[in-house]
Length: 515
Image 1 (cartoon, helix red, strand yellow):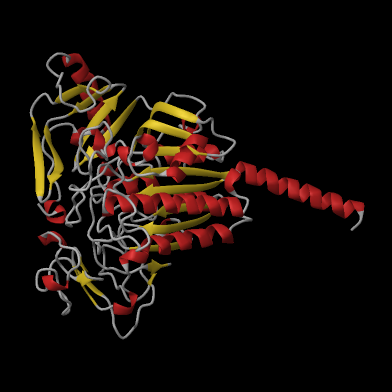
Image 2 (image 1 turned 180 degrees about the vertical axis):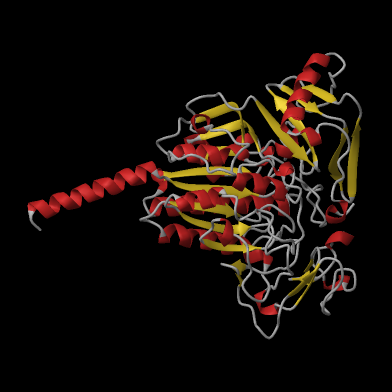
C-alpha cells in the first residue's frame, strides 16, 4: 500500500472514530416490578454486585422515577417521551390488546433508527400488537408491532409472563409455531380444551388466585385463555437466558454500527419461576432469586460489551417500570420470605399506588469515562430519556414526540445536580406530584396491594394530602391544612399539566387488575 492510500485509510478510520464518539451505543435495561430498595447499592439484601458496579462507575439517582406505578403506562412513556395519562389506552393491557403507540408518532427507537442506529427489543413488550380495526391473527405476520414503531429486530412476548399467549414472537411471527396447531387467544371466554387452574388444580405446581387461574402453560395457570401453539409455548425457567442470549447476539452482530438495545427481561414479574441453577440462591424465595437473575443478566451484558470492545462507548441505563409487589396473584412466599428486606426502601407503598414506592425506582446511568461518578439527588424521570438521548447525539426531538420530557443529559452524566423542578406520578389511573421535597396527592384514593389476596384503597378527601418527604418518607403526616398555599401551588401545576386528572376519582380498570 502506498503512502497516499495509507493516508486515506487513516483518515477514514479517524472519521469512523469520530462518528462512533458522536453516536455512542445506548442500552436501556428495564427491570419489571423492581423496587427502590431491591438493589443492594440502594440498601437491598440481595447481592446485586453487577448493578452496583455500574452505579460506582456512573450516576446513582436517589430521586429517579418511572412515570406510572404499573407496567404498560411506564413503558409507553419511556419509549414515547409522553405521559401515559395523555393516551387513554395506556393502561395495563390484556395479551390480545391492539398496539397503543401510533406508528406515526416517532418513538425513541424510531428516532435513533432514523439517525443511523441499529435498534432491537429483547424481552417484555406489553404495548399491544395489531390494529384495533381488525382481529389479530396470531398465526401469520403480527403487525403493527415493535417493527412499525422503530425496532429493526425484536424478540419478545406479547404482554407479560402471567398473560397468554405464552409464546415468543420474533420479528412479527410466533417462534416455532406449527401451522397445524394454530394459536387462539381470548380474554372473555374459553377457547379450546386446554385445562385451566380452576378446572384442573391438581396439574398446577404454583397455586394462583382466580384471576390467574385460566389456561395452564408449563404447569402454571395464566390470565386469559389460550389454545394451540403447543410447540411454541415457552418454559418460564428458560426465559431469562433466552432474552439475554438474543441481546448478546445483537451486541456481537453490531460492532461496526451504533446501536440501541431495549432489554426488558421478565424479572421480577410473576410468575417468578427462574432457571434451576438460580432456585434457592437467595434467602428471599423466588422473588429474591429473580433479583439475582436480573443482576446476572446485567453482568453478562457488560461482559459482552467488554469482550467486543464496546463498553466505553456505551451509555447504559438501568431502571424499573414501577415499584415492587410481594404478592401479585401467585402463592410463592414473597411476603413470608421477605424477612427484613424492604423492597421499597424508605418509601411507602409499591406497585399500583401513588405513594412514593410506586414510582420512585432504582435509576442508574453509566457511560464509562464520560459519566462523573457519584450519587445524585436530582429529580429525573424516564420520560426525560428521549430528549436527553436526542441531545446526546446532537439532534432535535421529532415533532409529535417527547413533549413531556426534558433534556437532562448533564444530570444523567453527573455534570450537574439540577434536574426536574417537579415530577408527575401516576398510580391506578390517578396522579400525584412531587416538587422539591413536597409531595401532593389530589383527592380520590390510593390503591395498592396490601397482602395475599387483599387490595387496600385509601380514600383521599379534599383538599388532598401534602407531605414533606425529607422529614416524612412514609407519607404519614398530612400537612395540607398547615400549608394551604403549598397545596394551591402544586394543584395549579397539575391543573396546567393534566386538568382532567386534577381532582376526583378515576375508575381503575378493575376487570384487568381483578379486584
